[in-house]
Image (cartoon, rainbow, N blue to C red):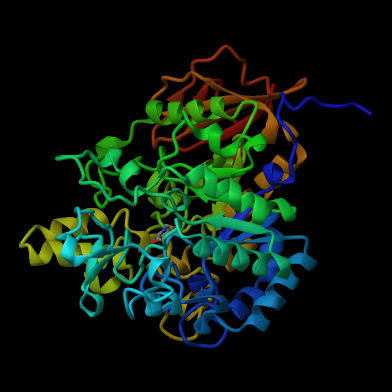
Length: 562
Ligand code: NOJ
């Protein structure tokens, strides 16, 4: 038997999978209340299977008052009533497993809902047994050192509680108080809860804002004019982060063959391996956000900024990160999720002439890079932004509270909406476009968030019929990744790296080698590389007709076998 060396990388199943992120609220409504639910997902299991993906990451489905769409949990061991029951959950898990698909859950343990029984108790008195489950600042000490809070109406992470004359800390909305991980009882509760789900058969977790669980709880004053980029030591990556992750591994992950991925603002290339080197028993993988600033203002993430779309720098980000994980650790690759606007609009083009080409080009990218790819539901058909300009169209606490702040301060809230319309999170949360019937076949009533108006042009039923569709291309690309281990583990090297339009790279493993060329622009681009592309075998391409040597049409994508 031929043994292929994986370029010193340890093979692991979770490195070889393709993950499909499923946002349950917007996937499929089965009971006519305009909100997606677990039975809706069950109805679509065969569709999910047909994609060829291996793992589903389910956004939070736990009981929640939905201030932040499920990221404010009031009961970690119950299913949100709007989504169904625990029996429905068990059937969903079984249905996925029967089809050979694994399920990872969202683990939201930096904070709970303020309606969680722990917080209700904690608020009752200063000597309540649950008091130290959260971070409190007694008012007689004076005002707590200021911390901004990105979802707060007043941009203040401390909320005064008159009942106990104290302030509690919340990085996100005031309905999301931060748990106090310094308290061993909190940690034990979390590990027990994780085991509860793992014992049910769940295959792992996506760990929400996991770097925030340890923070400097002395709460020192923020330095004057602190740049946004230096917020971490005050909000995250505290002194015990490694200890807590190792403890979590010991208590939970070491006992199961599972997969995990941390949402990890603040981890940099310098300390990435401290978190992901397998010998350290912390995380398997994590997401960073270095590449998601493409098209977003550097000074304020709530605003779009088209001048900030520099492809050569963007390529270097991927290159730098790839080098980190050449032998140890492992990357994640993603261009969309429930916190981002649609990848086709953001990184490609939603112009009707280019929409399908660019969606296919982006799938070629996601599925030919080194790292575990995460594909966000709806992107498999190239869903696009809705770009709403009226605040009534939004449901996201982030957008609504920021807008309110501007309005109250007499600042330019209209300008904000015009810019934010391109990047708001609700762009990525509109209901799935199943067909061209009313409400896009998502529901038989008005959905919780309006369906994108383009659902008659872009929908799954239509794309199923069209062999040339984004959907079929996506399936084909998954098939290619599965058939060529080099696309998973192969060495990654940029080609023509300063080219401002093309993202080109090779993937090499053993004697297999591929060249991937992606045109990220709406103009023809020329590749400067020492290879005769006209004579190379094309593995896949998103245009049906052959192209000229080294010349790539708008949003063209080609993979060659070299
Ligand atoms: C990150 C999640 O992805 C986002 O949706 C949520 O609002 C925050 N964490 C707070 O939990």
